[in-house]
Image 1: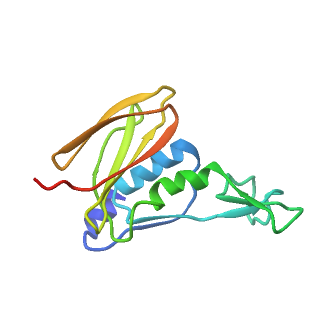
Image 2: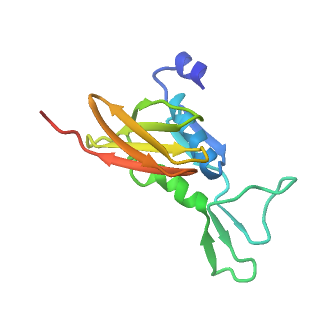
Length: 161
């Protein structure tokens, strides 16, 4: 993705046909944004409880929603729905990724500036222990603690001096 970003700096880079699961999936999504993706689209959003219909070999991974195979009016959401919501609920159309860093040894943040000037940081903790962290962004900072194996979203507005 980085090579495409360098080759076509004035073009958006859309990531499609991908599904990610769990905290590691949220971390992978942060990496896609870090390396220049302008969007992320999950490619299978619902299967039924019999894992149908699908058109590939093997068993697909989790989807955002599952429909009860015995009753088409009954469905439920999976944890992936909430993980994707860490990005989609607060990051607005036209947001720009302004910072990212970290890695698998601690927490992995990716920060966006929304068109209204507000900031959103999605922070992923893929480790098996709680992690204290400090986020520095455009001259401002805050500290927080993120429980093991979780994703947190932090929103703030710029404070003018």
